[in-house]
Length: 129
Image (cartoon, rainbow, N blue to C red; front, side):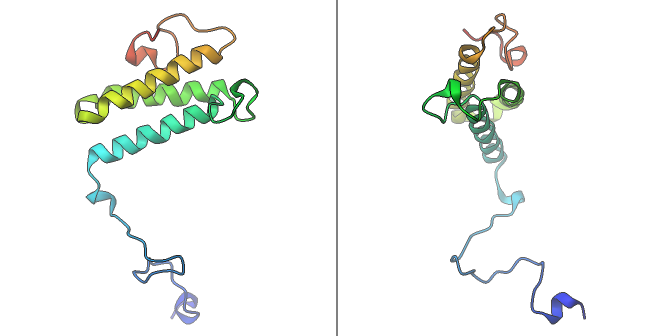
């Protein structure tokens, strides 16, 4: 027997509730693609908003402000949205609006804004004004 079996610990997931209460775990295979894509988009949006300092009262002085990182995340979001828009159904509109809001916020935060069409993700979405 292994040490894990001897001391009562195991790396295998348990179906017994923990002290924090019962939790429901969904197998990734059971999660619809539209939900995986939507959740990924929301995570990217949240990351971009943090990196633009939008979670702070004074975004320009936010300790989280990082335009280089925000550019990367917004570009990744634009690629995801553009590639998956046909699968998003009613979620497509709000996700696109969120992306455009982040692209505009990036432009506003930039000391030297990119030319139209050259901002983060605009090679996928077209110019955002």
